[in-house]
Image (tube, rainbow, N blue to C red; front, side, top):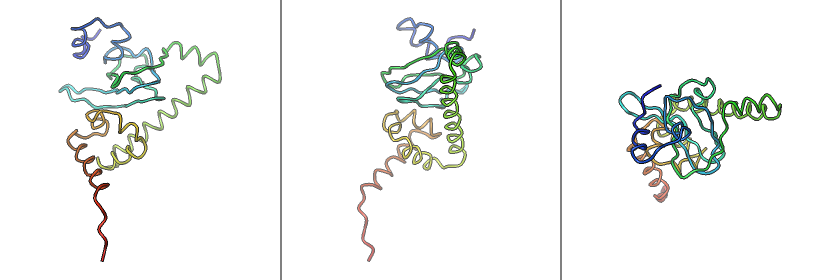
Length: 187
């Protein structure tokens, strides 16, 4: 078993965590569940050896989140999963999901559709990260996911978009100024 992650050790200085709560916090443990956000928001991220965080996924209402590589392969997780707001989730274990898929073609179709939507989303995200500038990435996200941009803390949003919080602040300030500045007549 891996040593405790720093965030888990920190929280446990104040209170004892259940195994499920540790899974929500720590890389290195197998993701035995995945979660559908009913209310609130979550962030899944990885850290480098130097401690730099890279947000892989953000989730708000009606989104599923987990360390999918760990969940599907039932191998140790590489991501941390944390709530960004007070949240309510539905959770399903790997075993429960497998049992439901085996018992019902309709439920198997539901989970397949969810997997396909996730794969397509991740493909678009990867393409965006590789082909767009930081400003274009923000503009795309703001246009396609305005609630995400409004609700997710700036540090998590910047990490998700692959930029610093300072650069994200500059982009946001330019957008606000562009909306406020009156258009000069062209004579």
